[in-house]
Image 1 (cartoon, rainbow, N blue to C red):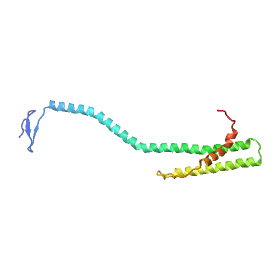
Image 2 (cartoon, one colour):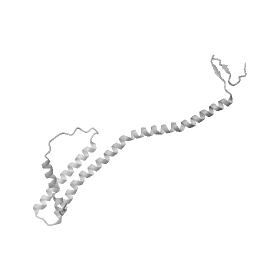
Image 3 (cartoon, rainbow, N blue to C red):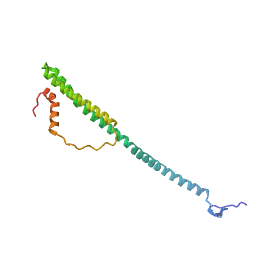
Image 4 (cartoon, rainbow, N blue to C red):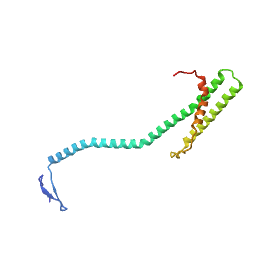
Length: 170
Protein backbone atom coordinates (compact mmCIF):
# COMPACT_ATOMS: atom_id res chain seq x y z
CA UNK A 1 0.00 0.00 0.00
CA UNK A 2 1.41 3.30 -1.06
CA UNK A 3 0.82 6.46 0.91
CA UNK A 4 1.23 9.97 -0.22
CA UNK A 5 3.83 11.85 1.82
CA UNK A 6 3.91 15.59 2.15
CA UNK A 7 7.29 17.34 2.43
CA UNK A 8 8.25 18.08 6.03
CA UNK A 9 6.28 15.25 7.54
CA UNK A 10 7.68 12.45 9.61
CA UNK A 11 7.56 8.99 8.07
CA UNK A 12 8.08 5.68 9.78
CA UNK A 13 10.66 3.40 8.16
CA UNK A 14 10.15 -0.34 7.94
CA UNK A 15 12.91 -0.91 10.47
CA UNK A 16 11.22 1.05 13.14
CA UNK A 17 13.19 4.25 12.59
CA UNK A 18 11.80 7.57 11.55
CA UNK A 19 13.04 10.05 8.94
CA UNK A 20 11.93 13.44 7.82
CA UNK A 21 11.05 14.08 4.21
CA UNK A 22 12.21 17.14 2.29
CA UNK A 23 10.86 19.01 -0.67
CA UNK A 24 12.85 19.25 -3.89
CA UNK A 25 13.50 22.91 -3.13
CA UNK A 26 15.03 22.00 0.23
CA UNK A 27 17.05 19.28 -1.45
CA UNK A 28 18.36 21.74 -4.07
CA UNK A 29 19.25 24.23 -1.35
CA UNK A 30 21.22 21.59 0.61
CA UNK A 31 23.06 20.53 -2.55
CA UNK A 32 23.91 24.16 -3.33
CA UNK A 33 25.28 24.70 0.17
CA UNK A 34 27.34 21.50 -0.07
CA UNK A 35 28.60 22.55 -3.52
CA UNK A 36 29.76 25.91 -2.16
CA UNK A 37 31.46 24.13 0.73
CA UNK A 38 33.24 21.80 -1.67
CA UNK A 39 34.25 24.73 -3.88
CA UNK A 40 35.74 26.51 -0.89
CA UNK A 41 37.34 23.44 0.69
CA UNK A 42 38.91 22.02 -2.47
CA UNK A 43 41.55 24.79 -2.96
CA UNK A 44 42.36 24.77 0.75
CA UNK A 45 42.82 20.99 0.75
CA UNK A 46 44.83 21.17 -2.47
CA UNK A 47 47.08 23.84 -0.96
CA UNK A 48 47.50 21.77 2.22
CA UNK A 49 48.44 18.72 0.14
CA UNK A 50 50.95 20.80 -1.86
CA UNK A 51 52.54 22.22 1.29
CA UNK A 52 52.69 18.75 2.84
CA UNK A 53 54.35 17.33 -0.28
CA UNK A 54 56.79 20.25 -0.34
CA UNK A 55 57.78 19.73 3.30
CA UNK A 56 58.24 16.00 2.78
CA UNK A 57 60.26 16.64 -0.38
CA UNK A 58 62.53 19.15 1.34
CA UNK A 59 63.13 16.77 4.23
CA UNK A 60 63.97 13.98 1.80
CA UNK A 61 66.27 16.29 -0.15
CA UNK A 62 68.22 17.52 2.89
CA UNK A 63 70.67 14.56 3.03
CA UNK A 64 71.29 14.86 -0.71
CA UNK A 65 72.04 18.56 -0.37
CA UNK A 66 74.34 17.91 2.59
CA UNK A 67 76.19 15.28 0.56
CA UNK A 68 76.54 17.71 -2.35
CA UNK A 69 77.96 20.40 -0.08
CA UNK A 70 80.40 17.93 1.46
CA UNK A 71 81.53 16.88 -2.00
CA UNK A 72 82.08 20.53 -3.01
CA UNK A 73 84.08 21.16 0.17
CA UNK A 74 86.12 18.00 -0.46
CA UNK A 75 86.86 19.11 -4.02
CA UNK A 76 87.88 22.59 -2.89
CA UNK A 77 90.12 21.20 -0.13
CA UNK A 78 91.68 18.67 -2.50
CA UNK A 79 92.45 21.28 -5.17
CA UNK A 80 93.96 23.58 -2.55
CA UNK A 81 96.11 20.81 -1.09
CA UNK A 82 97.33 19.73 -4.54
CA UNK A 83 98.01 23.27 -5.76
CA UNK A 84 100.61 24.04 -3.06
CA UNK A 85 103.16 21.31 -3.84
CA UNK A 86 102.63 21.81 -7.57
CA UNK A 87 103.40 25.53 -7.15
CA UNK A 88 106.58 24.73 -5.24
CA UNK A 89 107.66 22.16 -7.87
CA UNK A 90 106.98 24.67 -10.65
CA UNK A 91 108.89 27.44 -8.90
CA UNK A 92 111.86 25.15 -8.13
CA UNK A 93 112.14 23.94 -11.73
CA UNK A 94 111.70 27.45 -13.17
CA UNK A 95 114.35 28.83 -10.87
CA UNK A 96 116.75 25.94 -11.59
CA UNK A 97 116.31 26.38 -15.34
CA UNK A 98 116.43 30.20 -15.33
CA UNK A 99 120.24 30.46 -15.35
CA UNK A 100 123.26 28.15 -15.41
CA UNK A 101 124.16 26.93 -11.94
CA UNK A 102 126.64 24.71 -10.24
CA UNK A 103 125.84 21.02 -9.88
CA UNK A 104 125.25 21.43 -6.13
CA UNK A 105 122.55 24.06 -6.77
CA UNK A 106 120.81 21.76 -9.26
CA UNK A 107 121.06 18.88 -6.82
CA UNK A 108 119.58 21.00 -4.03
CA UNK A 109 116.66 22.00 -6.29
CA UNK A 110 116.08 18.37 -7.30
CA UNK A 111 116.06 17.28 -3.64
CA UNK A 112 113.41 19.90 -2.87
CA UNK A 113 111.39 18.84 -5.94
CA UNK A 114 111.64 15.21 -4.84
CA UNK A 115 110.38 16.20 -1.37
CA UNK A 116 107.40 18.03 -2.88
CA UNK A 117 106.66 15.08 -5.18
CA UNK A 118 106.60 12.79 -2.11
CA UNK A 119 104.34 15.27 -0.33
CA UNK A 120 102.08 15.32 -3.40
CA UNK A 121 101.98 11.51 -3.49
CA UNK A 122 101.03 11.47 0.20
CA UNK A 123 98.23 13.96 -0.41
CA UNK A 124 96.87 11.88 -3.29
CA UNK A 125 96.95 8.74 -1.11
CA UNK A 126 95.17 10.62 1.68
CA UNK A 127 92.52 11.86 -0.76
CA UNK A 128 91.94 8.34 -2.06
CA UNK A 129 91.61 7.12 1.52
CA UNK A 130 89.14 9.91 2.30
CA UNK A 131 87.11 9.06 -0.80
CA UNK A 132 86.64 5.53 0.55
CA UNK A 133 86.25 6.55 4.16
CA UNK A 134 83.10 5.70 6.06
CA UNK A 135 80.78 8.48 7.17
CA UNK A 136 81.74 7.88 10.84
CA UNK A 137 85.33 9.08 11.11
CA UNK A 138 87.35 8.16 14.18
CA UNK A 139 88.08 10.82 16.74
CA UNK A 140 91.29 12.77 16.02
CA UNK A 141 94.29 11.79 18.07
CA UNK A 142 95.91 14.24 20.39
CA UNK A 143 99.64 14.45 19.85
CA UNK A 144 102.19 17.15 20.52
CA UNK A 145 103.40 19.24 17.57
CA UNK A 146 106.72 20.99 17.16
CA UNK A 147 105.63 24.30 15.66
CA UNK A 148 109.23 25.48 15.18
CA UNK A 149 109.97 22.45 12.97
CA UNK A 150 106.74 22.92 11.02
CA UNK A 151 107.51 26.63 10.45
CA UNK A 152 111.10 25.86 9.38
CA UNK A 153 109.89 23.19 6.93
CA UNK A 154 107.37 25.62 5.43
CA UNK A 155 109.99 28.36 5.13
CA UNK A 156 112.38 25.95 3.41
CA UNK A 157 109.66 24.73 1.02
CA UNK A 158 108.85 28.24 -0.13
CA UNK A 159 112.37 29.69 -0.11
CA UNK A 160 112.76 29.13 -3.87
CA UNK A 161 109.45 30.85 -4.56
CA UNK A 162 110.34 33.72 -2.26
CA UNK A 163 113.81 34.02 -3.82
CA UNK A 164 112.38 34.30 -7.33
CA UNK A 165 110.19 37.29 -6.44
CA UNK A 166 111.52 40.84 -6.05
CA UNK A 167 111.30 42.19 -2.52
CA UNK A 168 108.31 44.36 -1.76
CA UNK A 169 108.01 47.16 0.75
CA UNK A 170 105.13 47.38 3.13
